[in-house]
Image (cartoon, rainbow, N blue to C red; front, top):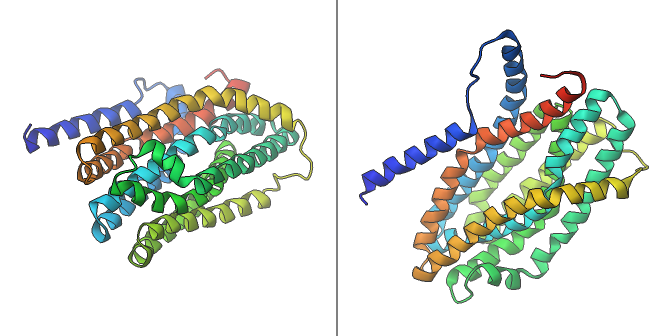
Length: 327
């Protein structure tokens, strides 16, 4: 297939992904316009927030490709995908917490709202501690996903060993962001997120030059820590954390039961990427083809931005509209 046909095919697939993630309203009745405004009010800041993740990911890829080799890029990409699999297994709370917070906030049930906030924060800390398995068993876990007789295997270990330190902070950040999203206070979260990602962008080339892949991973860890500090400060100012937590076991069991099937989908999607990686490495151990595959995946992730923004809007609006309206 010629390069021109490949380019056209990529554009068509990207367009279809974009259309799948966002569709314009079909009707222009007054009630629909009001609903559109409500959706847009939440979707706009949420989309801005989600833009940062793929953009920073592309910048990381750019610096690794500029300052490193194709095996560095393939190793960092493989390590990042392994990290994503473990993260997807334990990050079920944000999907469940947002509609619950939105409902309680609409009902002005501050006592139960604080219980849910406390439960979700404690659970995120517990789940984050389980993420330490990545740090203490990096070699064994990486061997399950990447062939151990390749240079990429050792590169992936270098990256993943440091990147895994960020797991507790990533989980905590996602939970706090979901809480703020349920309270319809996304703007505060965006400012903290943008600041942390700017720090990541600045530190990336500096640490990459001095420490290689370990430096790239370290810059991500530091940015997540900064984000955690900012998010915790917002939560404390809102006085949402209480000294006593009621119905912790009851709420925890409910979240785990509902979260299991939700996360199974995300786990299988990430696992599919790992299968792709192993297949590509089976016919190209240099990492050149895998590096190209990872770059394409980074580009395609940009088409999911609007979908994620609309997903945030739906989880907030539907849960609150169910209480008082039938819209």
